[in-house]
Image (cartoon, rainbow, N blue to C red; front, side):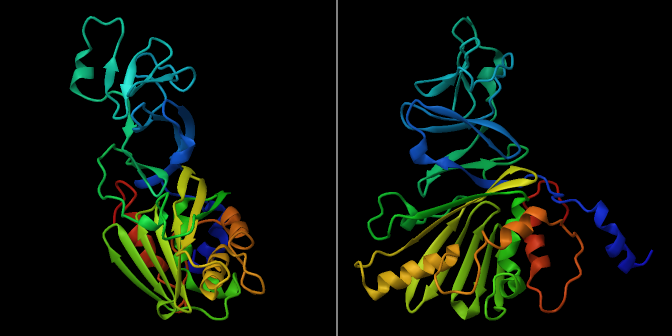
Length: 332
């Protein structure tokens, strides 16, 4: 069978999302949605988790099934002080997964004194978001989240971020690959021309410059990226924090902000127009946003591991090599 025949006849054997869940920092919830003493269940990273906030304000993200006899802590469990308590026998666990109390034990099981026994994901709060570190082998965080004060709650120099959320039936890698697929901006979104891209990779970070500096992308692993757009001397910024729900479903999340300008000024109107353009809601523009055109592609495409590319395509293979590092055990 020739190479061409494989491409023509082989689509039935293609997988939509032939990837494991990548490791990195991922969005869990907005911090404002979790009060002290509250817990909730979330589905992400191909399983269910318990998210809770202790009385001091610390956030825990743990496996929901008690290491004792397997009860689901989320159904009837309770936050007690700095721990969450299993409803079955009232064993308690802190945000790092250590068993802190067994109310009827004269002596803690040795393993409970030696190490955490409930799987817990390291969690931090930044940008008003609860972010957790995930690694399939429970390895510690390999990098820290960057500081971005313009997205922090209560920031007095930037407008309150606008939020966007969408559920998409594809893997998170497929969403991120859009950033280097410059040709689709012309033919899918209706941009007037295909932009030129400059790409730089440094460990877990990937930087993309577009259109001679009119737009910059900075990716910090698979679950966090910033998009900065410039127009008429005005800057607007988008924070992207997508998360894999399953291997074939992702939640795409974004926040948009810009500096505060007096209402009605040219600067304020330009900044607002940049944000509208990034979302795809600009009036009078022929280009279409991702809701209208990207979504049908993402929801229905299959992944070509060895695509046929031409000299006008963007640095897709270089991006795939960058992203592959976040799959534990993948060969480079």
